[in-house]
Length: 172
Image (cartoon, rainbow, N blue to C red; front, side, top):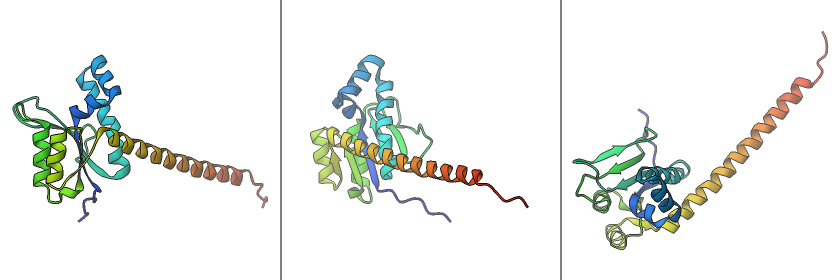
């Protein structure tokens, strides 16, 4: 039986908190609405999932009678979680940290001081909005380097193959 991949950790993003902390997402929110701002946030943090092998859950305050999970990429390890109405994202994040088998594997992205204290008291780690952005930028730089190296290798293989095709062959 195949084993599930081991993830480096679980990033929980306090969605609306981060949206309101990043000026470019506040602009998206004002100009295009909350759905567009959520989607943009998801696109930005996606690279942490892809490059650093983190499970990523963006947590947003309630919008219905029960919790809702959306998986835009249909992957179990990348989700948008909407709390039930009357339950805050902070409460769900706190529950996830408190009930985690290994809270040290959880990183919560937020600027909320009370949430930061609660997560830390229960063994989780937090990053602020600026540190989250730096993490994303680092992932982007590494991704660009990997793509550049892949392109150089591919061009070399194509060049070698083309040169091999142009080599005169003896007639026999």
